[in-house]
Each structure stands twice: as structure tokens, then as C-alpha cells.
Image (cartoon, rainbow, N blue to C red):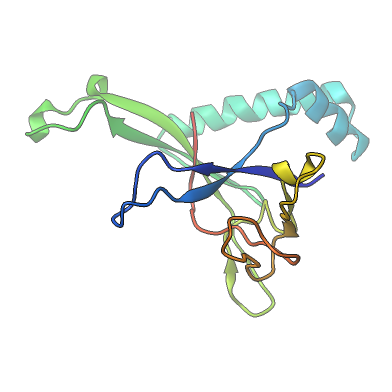
Length: 177
């Protein structure tokens, strides 16, 4: 199944006064722990209950380590760590800053891999993903928009894309709240 995306127009104009268009991933559902456990159990010698128990214990242990100011690195997935952010716009003096005036967030940084040309692929979780523009699935739509990660951009400048591949870019941290 490809990653589905739509196109949305920014509500804020850029320096030239133009409201630009941007892709936005469309989520089609939520995968529960039960379903994840069933699928992992099918790929291993563990029972569904064993997998669920392992995931529950992983969350408990990760929480303990992150609340001890440690990041948690899971090979082939990435690292999880805590970040603090001021509530509001900040403070005039260092003395005003305290834990009650901040918000704690869980952050995720995907692991990196090396491509055959020695460049770094920072998004190992999406390597090989394919993409389909959601409005191209509607009957009578003339918008092209399917592609895959790993190739060059195939944008024709019209907001859609020509036949070929599309490559998502940018970003290094995902905010998990």
C-alpha cells in the first residue's frame, strides 16, 4: 500500500505574497497494539501474548530510561528522547525558568543508514516507500501523482507530478505528543 498524500495551500503568504502549496500525508487508520502483536507473532516464534507483553515491558523500560535523562536507541528504528519547551514565549531571566513552566515532549529521531554511494539516508523507516496523490484515486481525476522514494524529483511545476518518482525530503526529528 502506498503512502497517500493530498495537496494543501498554505494559509500564510511567503515574502512574495504567494500562498504556496504543500503535500500532506493522509492517514487512513490507526494500527492497534493487538494488530501489531498479531503481525509480529506471525513473523516470529512468539505468541501474540508474548509479543504484547514484550512491547508493554519495552514501553515501561523506555519510560524509566528517558525519565532518567537517557535517550533510548533501538537499532534499525531510531532513538527516543525527551525535550523540554517553555510554556509561552520564554522568560526574561534564568531564575524564572522551572519545571512547572515547561512542557515535556517525547522526540523521535529515525536511525540513519549509508547508501551505496556513501551518502547518508536519514529516513530508514521510509526507504522504499511508494507514494500516491489521493486525488489521483478519484474517478475522473486528471492529476498524476504516484512515485517512490529513492529517485529524483519528477515535479512538473503544476502541483502534480509527471510519471516517474517522487522523493520526500527534509526534516530529522519527529515530534511525538
